[in-house]
Image (cartoon, rainbow over all chains, first blue to last red; front, side):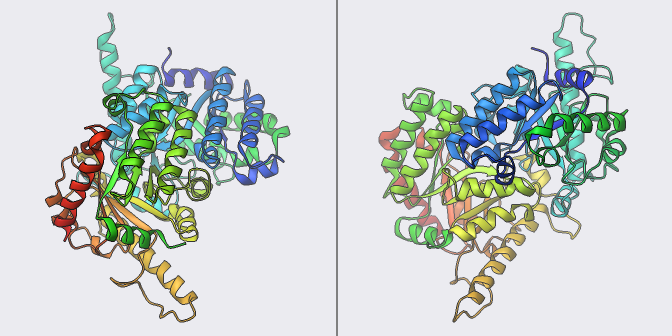
Length: 292
Length: 292
């Protein structure tokens, strides 16, 4: 199977740089005139997939909205995942998982091998990047991706993410650099395993690694080593949360083409299913122009 | 409904200071001669509840092990939650959830109001403590608890958690102090709402707040302001991960009695269901002696 990063680059190359959130919040179910139960989630997800397949490369269902309805909601989530993948969409499960030890190994099974398997899963690094090892190994083995939350724009998140580690780097810079090193190491391993591999690190034209970063599109990227991440960068916050295509262009323009996924949810979903496809295409084209 | 913290103090007072993990990993399902599927999860959980009810005050099912089997696994999780609560156990859903914005509100619905509602849920603070606001509000409103991961002992976690914030505190100290302030604020609010409330902050004999902390039992507590947290302290890592009852006594002895929940999983579960009750009681008594 083609690795996650390469699939993203190919899909973005074909359609344009955008990821659309599938976020069936109570408010959006209401706006779509759907019941706030598992059947509402299922219809909401199905309509999103219908409208978005062929128009955008990547979707990102947020697991929290499905969890609200317990196991029945998670059954709707399973269906949305599988519908979206069958429709040719690359699917990022926005689950923000992260823990130490054998729990991390269980997450790896859940998100890359079990019924919830997606193309990639988002992860949270409070217990450190290394703790995500089992998730990254499973991603590497199955052609998946792990997108690690690094930099958000909320003030309280800033305080933690700008704290300075013992080696003088901020937490967010240390994470982003750690992700870059991890991808280079994994790239070197695969290269040395290939019969005619040249070894060395993936260059700007080489493979895209399985470890990516989540960096808020609302967040100034000054001082963030984004161009060395070597993986996919998911940038949520376009639209309702305040980032414009121009912000995206300014903040992520230096990244390797095809690896940046600006993500919008409410601003596209709020108008109901009827306008979703057209609105998503328009935003996709605006983002493509801004990142050109 | 009696608030979470008070329920924990009462249950620990009646039975002793221990929380037992319900962790149906692949390895433990195998050791218990159960199939690695949703039916295995269901039987594993049911036997844990049978063995532990009346012997320990608190259990902590780890959601990751149920997620491995998708929606069917989450249906088993729902059943375990409800069995455990019916059997009089206080239940902490070990889910490590955490996100910003309206996702945090969805988590609040999921873990305090939906079919997965538990007595408390664990949370991860990479996007900051304030982002957990909707979860804490829901906990306060429903008599639940939110236990925030603060300090773990894995080396990579140490680097992040010991990073220094702009005000000169480490990340973990800032979180623990922030939790203490939050509990005092919530305590003052409830006190000022009561007709004969004296206002002011909960003292060592006052209410236990809804916000708690997760601090590894394997982690030296030197420099951590544990006695001012004002909520429940969950201390995983007893047994298989290396912490002894003596470690627990040394590290958490200064905390308010009844608020510390040392937690063990594999060391108790590994011997199979037949010995679980007796082994859990023995460890409970050793922990009670160490914390006396």
